[in-house]
Amino acid sequence: MDQIMLLGFGTKGWGGMLLLGMVMTFLVTFTALAIGAVLGALVAWARLSRSRLARFGGEAYTTVFRGVPELLVIYVVYFGGSTVVTSVGQLLGAEGFIGFPSFIAGALAVGVISGSYQAEVYRGAFQAVARGEIEAARSVGMPTLMRFRRIIAPQVMRFALPGLGNVWQLSLKDSALVSVTGLAELMRTSQVAAGSTRQYFLFYIAGGVLYLVMTSLSNQVFDRAEARVARSFRGGLGRG
Amino acid sequence: MADTARKSARGVAPLALSVKGIHKSFGQHQVLKGISLDAHEGDVISILGSSGSGKSTFLRCINLLETPDDGDITVAGEQVKLRRTGDGHLQPSDRKQVDRIRSELAMVFQSFNLWSHRTILENLIEAPVHVQKRPRAECILEAEALLEKVGIADKRNHYPAHLSGGQQQRAAIARALAMKPKAMLFDEPTSALDPELVGEVLKVMRTLAEEGRTMLVVTHEMGFARDVSSRVMFLHQGKVDAEGTPQEMFGDGGSERFRQFISNTIR
Image (tube, rainbow over all chains, first blue to last red; front, side):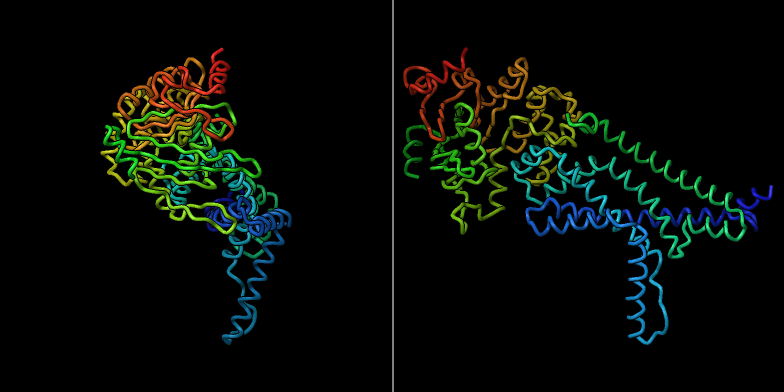
């Protein structure tokens, strides 16, 4: 009975805090995905570029950020960012350690990693766009930018959808590592609740269940989007 | 210009398209070795040749999907501005002009190349609305009439993937017509089709020829070349081997090589 009270929304319950943690996890992941989309698109473009230097830069980015532990990237961004903020603060006369905002640090770190995975997704999706359709766009006199906006980008997004679903799920789980910066997202809240009530099993299992709720809900969203695209687009996502 | 005036005086329509001395190489391989062609308004010119003769490349040079290494292209009196780069190759010097001229030379491809993320109707109005900036409502009305004309009005809200090859190619022809082009370029429009679907596409092309549209058709359809076109051009190894009216070409006028080509084709 007591345990149910602990998960509830009463004065002694952690339910409200856990829900807030979920919202924070969602926000960090969503922001990270958006940052990753911009970085990923740029890196994909670099990797497809004719310039050898751009290709090298793009490849270096994906190799590095897919190859090093997520936690390390988070530490680099958070403590590195804090060092910069602190020294800027000292120049302006402030004293002592100034922390880099943990939300921004977390979203940025997860976003940078997400970008390295998204880059591969976009690159593959671009290569799936039929060359002939791009040529048809050229043949009717579409300028480069219009071609990208009207023909290439919409198709890349359709082809990228299944891959983006994967990246979203990865980023959602990566966001748990942001808890090391003290950001009160779902992982950190579960940890604090478990520690202060000594109900480790209860709260870590509750946290796990809430993560599963989030991933399965978002899976459904992606599945529905894919089904919608499949109805019209080339009779499914296969080539045809 | 004097040439055009003289022909006009003889009752020949003005030039829709004039191409002179097109050369094109891919690496060491010289694909086109100086090809010229004049198309007057209403001309239907069939371009024949065995594979590798350069006929598709020639067509692609005309609307600059490939940039020729040398030569002149004039569309409805307007010459395409090309400039020579440091390494001696030509390059279009005015992208806007290239885009405008492309929109006046609608191309129909072997593999249809309809935009797979758009419905048939959306495919038809895409370029008129976004490239030519014409009013959407007007474009939709015209597109519906064109779909009626090529016999697939009932497919307007379908996606290309749900159409047969013949229907897709007819939709692609309608998409080309929607641009109100000065000339149409057909790049082997029936080569990717199952034999039983070839007829429906050729029928549409026949209708267009009868309407007096200017058409350049790269094809393997001897019947179309003989019965529909006003002129036949036979390419061999990047050069014009023989050229003339269908009567001349399929009579005694064609070259020895052309006669051999036809006898190999009709088996």
